[in-house]
Length: 579
Image (spheres, rainbow, N blue to C red):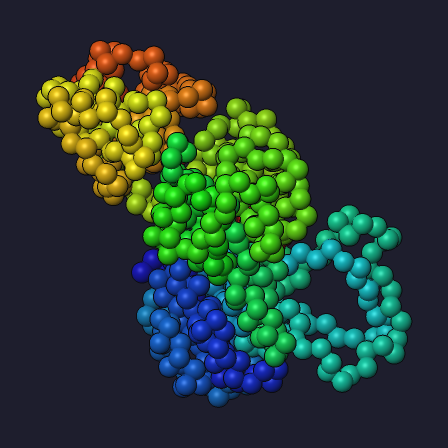
């Protein structure tokens, strides 16, 4: 094991004065301790999680959820020891198993903070490696703080807290002590809007990355630590029964509604995108999203139900298509219906905690919290600070991730795909262009195709096999190159590193694909509605014969769509919801 690999330690006592046996308590179907262990194991770079405890029953519980407990704490560290002493003991015990040096990030995650985010742990480790002796997690507070003038109040500094409970979000109120005998003085200069107050940072106890050098000096934080600002959910600590009750409600997740239509002339890309976001929201925010769809898009409704999601189908003649969404009293709404009505979005925004518009260039974005236009580069979008534009926000399904980048000497397999409905009839054009050219093709025939010209073209092209509803990731891996229209499939092909020629089906596609063509991400051939079969045949032959061009397209495409768009969008949503 490399000495720069993190050593993750979770200090957990078997009992606690604030809430006895709290690490055993059930939260969202699993013990409180298990949430921290599982989060740690989800962090890239953390290979194992060490739980240090004096309690054999808690040790066994930790093992059941994937942690290692190779020793029990000695009696001297079982009750009132300070946290840095517990961590230092665990580090010394582990030296017999792995190298631990000054460069080793010692990641301390307190077990009573169940909702910390993997991304925050990763950031803390990165900042330690950037040169900080220690990094702590903090919550930003902009409030009217007062301080007692008398000397009776005490403050805990580094390691002044219980060994396993850290510096959390309070405990239960009502300790019985009278703290109101003295006078207060303000910690603010003047009354102002809360957003204009000087921020203070409260140590949360959720994350601490420290070093052996600090532990040897009798501390785990030091005098000037680096820090990671976490949101309110991530900083919630369970120190008493009220905290546990609150955590139970938060574990249910926010009410999330997707308003989306798919199928017909619109294709299923919108639905696919929302299903991908829904799965990630379920994983990260414990949400169980509901979908609202119009009845005249049955293919989209069927796809959502096939994915096991709840769907409410509304009449297409509904006077206010967002009324069913508002009636659900949602915390978070995603609108994936192309151009939105500004007044209806404004009304929805008054009732929902956050509204996110996906691919919207109409009037609604001005009232949304976030607008994501991944198919348009920033220079093509006239938006405000709430706009997230460009391929870095493209939502990529799992099947298109982490594909090997291979560019064969000869291109023998071609993929032809033009969306779920192909309104411009480009499939028939493409089949006619490649008929009998000596290569093997697969044409993806969408669920809403009804094209007699395509049937005629296929009859004259024995080298083209039409497939319906294939596993697209596998088909793209099979293909040496592709010809497609300018929708989401072009971005999915880019993510897989498939060299691609693009024909636009409409003016919108033309605008964005022309920009990608200029950047060398795709071979853009222009508006397909004016393309001849002969011209397309020449373009395909040229690409198939030019390995160097195929390699350049593949490499630029993979750089262009890096697969992290879903995470970037949900990070922004997280910020909009939780601060």
